[in-house]
Image (cartoon, rainbow, N blue to C red; front, side):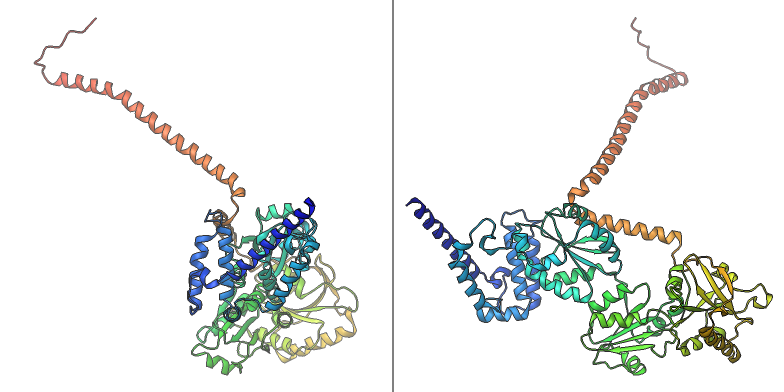
Length: 593
């Protein structure tokens, strides 16, 4: 009998809890939560949300109900900021489209609750147990070694968005729908995604500085930045965009496009232009610019600006379709063009990869030499480099223009054309040039094949200096045709020295960049990092300040005491001096024994 009464009381308690949950869900009004009218504009909604979010943020408001209030504010803004969800709520009183399905699901849970109430099952079907979590988290789970060896190096090519979660985390469940939506969108754009389970990967969570769950952070160039706003789709998208450097994409207009495209010679990079109708640069284009920042320069043209018609007419651009042009050595004619609506990341990557280098790129570093002139792998995979050794010039010289036109007409996939400034890479040039006075101050062309990474090459240098004449082109073409049949044509052998990095900043600039990065990291750590990690540093700083000020105060007091002690003798000496100079009319008092 007692067991039966106990079961009845349990069932009554469960029914009461379910009824309270349903009533609280029905009582939720996003307009009332944000304090706006039903006719409020998006600007008014956003303004009200920012005001309430600052007031009720759990980090600033210590009220016990601040976290629940902040969750309601975030949920209300998520509904009203989305026109589709807002319209659905205005018509049906719920932001979800599958309202009927949810009602059936509630009834099913209510009828079969007694069958599922076990300790190994989630209470009310909340996904507290990690085994019942959605497989989306399992796909992106990170471990410490994977983070250090793969994520950090890869963050120099793309930003990462990482979520810190754990079991029995109410807030983790609340942000789950938004996280799924954001992951599906950003991963398609090229953003890396990761999930760290703080319960199983405590070392990694502590290394990232996350001491509470849930937490969302971004990683770019090996640097960790924490997300501090409400977990809604637009805020997360803006957070990822804020991780990227601000100078990735240059705004190009009819006034500066010639200067932008003419920078290929100094930067030694192709230049990319995107023509689009959006006033802001698309996030996909920014992420692509970050991934290929070492190889190309990116610009953006908003076709809605005045004066852009001249550019679109010159390059025959369709203003109604996003168009990407790639320019190499010729700024008046693009080397490649692509037009597509809703451009996908894979298509864009393939297009950029095919145009990563100039037609006759300048060898400015050993890394670029490895990429343009790879080592021979086998007899069937021979790669030849035709190197123009020339003097540096501000304008294109006739020998270089002839070499460039020859490279443009080349159709062989096994041949790559490059050039080297002899005055900047003297050891490299002297190794390939013959010991003859005929090449002093003149250009020369060498054909080489790399044999190993240590610098060993076989090469053939043309007998006469390169002037760019038709006879020079004919001789070079004959050598290349002969090289297909007889690789032994490259009879000379040498060991090339490593190229110096011409584009590397000088020591002072590197020091300034490092100092600015350190200051920015420290500033960000003071305001956004976890205070547990900052305590040792703060303790050291305050201890040093205490010792410094204590020493100054003690020194000041000791100086004042010395002045007081030294003042009476001074007065006596002054009296003695005055007594000697002036006659005394008063009788001196008798001294006491």
